[in-house]
Image (cartoon, rainbow over the protein chains, first blue to last red):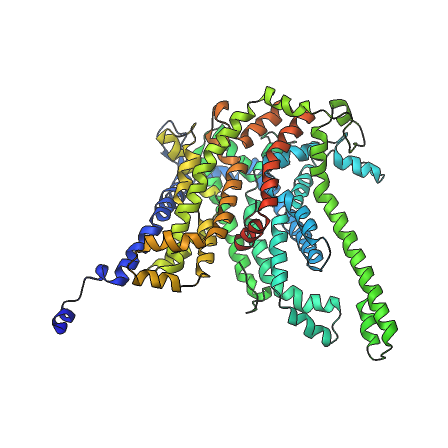
Amino acid sequence: MAAVMRGTPKPWLKTLRGKEAIACYLFILPWIIGFTVFTLGPIIASFGLSFMDYDLVLPPKFLGLANFVELFSDSLFYTSMWNTLYIVILAVPLGMLASFMMALLLNQKVRGLAAYRTAYFIPSIVPAVASAALWLYVLQPEWGLLNGFLSWLGIQGPGWLASEAWSKPSIILLMIWASGGSMIIFLAGLQNIPKEYYEAAEIDGANSLRRFQYITLPLMTPTIFFNLVMGVIGTFQIFSVVFVLTDGMGGPVNSTLVYLIYIYRNAFNYFRMGFASSMAWVLFVIILVLTLIQFRTARFWVHYDTDTVEG
Amino acid sequence: MTTITKQQESQPTRISRTQRTRVVKAVRSLLTHLFLLVGSFFFVAPLIFLVSTSLKASRQIAKFPPDLIPDPFIWANYSDVFIYAPFGTYLLNTIFIIIPTVFGAAITSSLAAYAFARLRAPGKNAIFMVLLSTMMLPGVVTLIPTYILYAKLGWVGSFKPLIVPVLFGNAFYIFLMRQFFTSLPRELEDAALIDGCNYLQIFWRIILPLAKPVMATVTIFAFMGAWNDYFGPLIYLAEKSQYTLSLGLQVFVQQHSTEWGLLMAASTMMVTPIILLFFFAQKQFVQGIMLTGMKG
């Protein structure tokens, strides 16, 4: 009997393994459908659209590379790219530096840690529109909070959002204010460093600067790397805060016209869906290349230790 | 400072050394607190002035340098907000969008997370890699075709574009919950399998009850995501009667750009629930951010 049963094996799907696999696919299915319809399909479609002219009403017309040719001769493309790069280059490192320093301070066993941590973190969860409204007040040139504070120090503050030179720094300041999320990630990274390393170093006579240089910094490089990669991807797509702060205009004189506002304008004000898609793809390629460069260069400076856990 | 104490180690003058260490420690902690205080001033002052300005009269707001304490307290700013804009409707609309979003995050994503964490199937790991890579995908590449899709379906100008896609689960939440499920012990599930439970029953009766902490985290993030979302409502909603709080507040900012008391009162009302939520669920916030690196 047993031999006969072994001779005609059950179809794979009826086996325990098969049932498990079916359950697995079924449970993942909603996400796969969502991914196909709302991510994969649109990626392919936007690639196709970037070679077309489409305004939602008339049927799409194939243009070849015309969108890209126009884009690379469009001065506002360069303006918006420059504005975005300016913000990325300053806001990402400064935000990381600020949040890393805060995390270092918080990692000293200070009294009131929870209160300080809360104070640093809360700005990062304030809704973008509300924080933009708040910073309109903070940065108000005549009687805003920041210039009020500066005048108290005897400094005459600039026009901030009203000034072409200071509008981008204003946004960067707001972003640093809201960088509490990366502070939490840094703090978690710091707390993951095994205490024994510091104890051993102290016995060997390493001072705090040395301990920072040879233990903290190397062991924090995976966390720094993580924050850097996510920060660059996120900051290239900055939109809401700038849009609200400048009434959707990216002013004054296009000095805060960031890339996504320019995409928005082309897509939803001019209904140039094809041109906007080509813009989206240019940004996508830039972000992809920069991310790949970061991953490639990571092996020269990111130190992976078996004891640290990275989320 | 520490160098000095270290050099002393060779000459064991015990009392002076401990005293010195104590002084060094005190100075150090004082400096740390000083830096922390100056830092927290930068972070907290805008929020304090947000509340204080929301209670000021216009002429006191225009005073330079600004006062901290409102004089007199103008509570009417808060009630006036509702006269100028239907914030009650905005709130209802926001809640209407939040409920399915939270459902999608908690149910769909947790089922997928369970499968990724526990069930074996050919190709599963490849699918998971795709899921991970979508977490880094810039949203802007999918923006325009999705908009066209909704426009063709006639969904633009309704809540559907803000609700339907989130029902299919979210890569961040799936990842976060998968990490949690992987850490749960296996024994209970094995016992249930032997007793003849199917995987859905195992998920429903064993995994979900254990998943409360991570469910709380995901629910909070889904809530915050929908509460804070501005871009979605901006491009998909048309009528004022459909506006969410974010969009409503932005339009309010545009229309009342000089009435700072009103603006700050409206902003305070939008910020307060989020801050309260944070105080009730600090642990979940911190966990969620640590696991996903998500920025608010």
